[in-house]
Structures are given as C-alpha cells and as structure tokens.
Length: 210
Ligand SMILES: Nc1nc2c(ncn2[C@@H]2O[C@H](COP(=O)(O)OP(=O)(O)OP(=O)(O)O)[C@@H](O)[C@H]2O)c(=O)[nH]1
Ligand SMILES: [Mg+2]
Image (cartoon, rainbow, N blue to C red; front, side, top):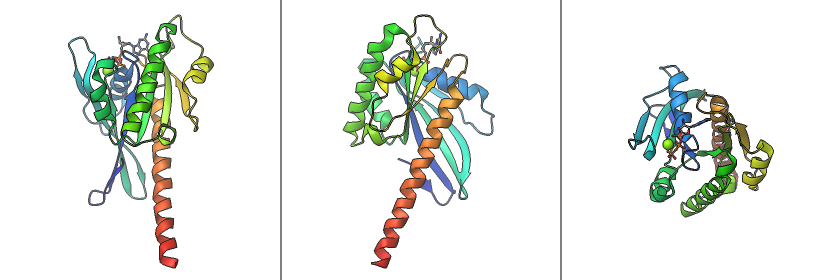
C-alpha cells in the first residue's frame, strides 16, 4: 500500500512486475535502469541465480512527479517466475499498489501465461485483495520473435477482468514499450491514490456535517 511520509513530503508506491518464467520482467527493470537519468533512479538490486533467473526479487526505486507538494517515489519489484518460488512471489506482492503482468507472446508460452495469471489472482486473494480493483497493465512482451500470438488474441485470453486493464506490446530487451508500460501503471496508481484520498476527505466532511 502507498506510504505517505509527511516529514519528508514523500509518497511511496510499490509496483510489482509479475508473470511467467523468462517472460522478461527483469529485462524491463534492467532497461529502465539503463535509460533513466541518474538523479531520478536509484541502484538496481538483482537477487538472481548464476543463470540470471530471479531467485528472490529485483528492486529499482524511481523518483517521479510532484503531487500537491509531495514527491512520489515508485519502487519497482520483480518476482521470480519459476513455479517453485510461489511463497516468495506472495511475499513480494505484499502491499503492491500496481501490477505489471509481463506475458510472453510466443505461442508455446500461452499455458504458462495463463498459469501465472491464475497464480497472481490466487496470491492477491491470499492478501485479501481483489484482482479487479488492483491497478494492472498487461505487457505483451517478446513481440520481436517469430511464432507469436496476435495481440488481440492475447488480450482476449488475459484481459477478462471486470475492469479491463491496459495492454502494451513490448520488446523489453530492446526497450520497446517498456517506458510506456511504466507510464501507464504509474498513472493508474496515482489516479487510484487520488481517488481514495478524496473519498476519505469526503467521508470526514460528511461525518462533520452530520
Ligand atoms: N527476444 C526477446 N527476448 C527477450 C525479451 N525480453 C526478455 N528476453 C529474454 O528472455 C530471457 C528471460 O528474460 P528475463 O528478463 O530474465 O525474464 P524474467 O521474467 O525476469 O525471468 P524469471 O526471473 O526467471 O522469472 C532472457 O534471455 C532475455 O534476454 C524480448 O522482448 N525479446
Ligand atoms: Mg527475473
């Protein structure tokens, strides 16, 4: 959940990159780290195996826009995609304000995408969260490869929540679609924060006038 530090005038948001093994989650953070100006981004922490598979998580903090005098900081995490690391995924998902689901566009990976999406839904439920109300962007990654599913087909398979999520086509290793994905999820997270904040204000006002 977003964390407001009134002393430092900061709001911290957590965005988790989720998805099937080898889908390209770590590649998203690696690209962002490479292209973001040094004054905007912190260090990229990667906890991986020798084969570059994420073992626990990757972490990249970014400083973003100012809202009403507060600096918003987005803390980007990836989960390990390999099925055996489910407990770790659940822990990393704790308190996520937004999720980027990095799907692998190769035909051979459609079952893996679907399994990972079901796993995400179950893990959100285990945190008492609803899949349909959590800000979410589907990134259709690896669009550079042959034998990929058409984007509308993938969108049909993945994007059937009550609230339709955004879909972005990407080639994370080349950086295509990576910034757009991040922009979209950050906007959704900020919009939800502002809406929730206003809701609380209006509830207080109603109580005062009663
Ligand atoms: N051709 C192509 N390869 C990609 C793309 N994105 C990632 N890869 C490759 O896919 C492999 C896995 O990428 P990662 O970013 O490590 O995937 P991950 O989702 O973090 O994997 P786990 O941590 O094991 O869950 C690497 O060899 C990447 O270079 C892409 O858009 N196109
Ligand atoms: Mg990884």
